[in-house]
Image 1 (tube, rainbow, N blue to C red):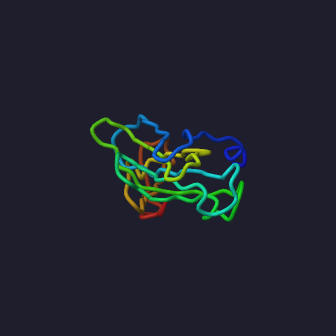
Image 2: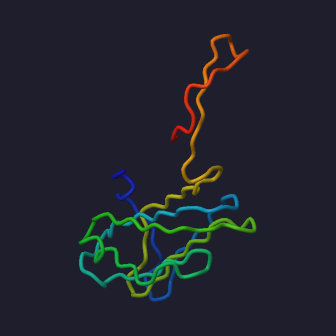
Image 3: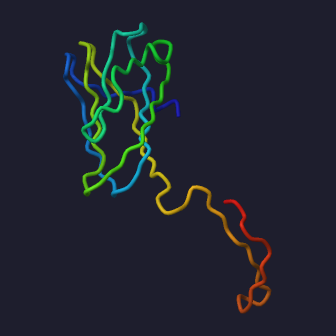
Length: 142
């Protein structure tokens, strides 16, 4: 939604300063989407920062203005993250230039938590309040 891009949080200006979050989630595989729209810089390479997830470099030198095409233009970055040992998700944005790293939104999606890649179902009908069932179809895609 547009409202996500109307506010932001950022690190303190200065190389190697960072902003970080410890996001409590159950152990499992997740898709982390980071939403950006540079609030003040329009030229490429003026604001660069690294994205670190679970203590490891996920992407180096993110350049929101350069990659999105300018000031206040949305950019979404997506990463697969595994949470283990009840530690949740550790996210850190680290300044590579004096202009501070920032973020507009964080979206966390559980990656297929209880199922298979292409689930199917069998369909049956009961005409006697569940006493007996008659198959109608099998292997239907969900």
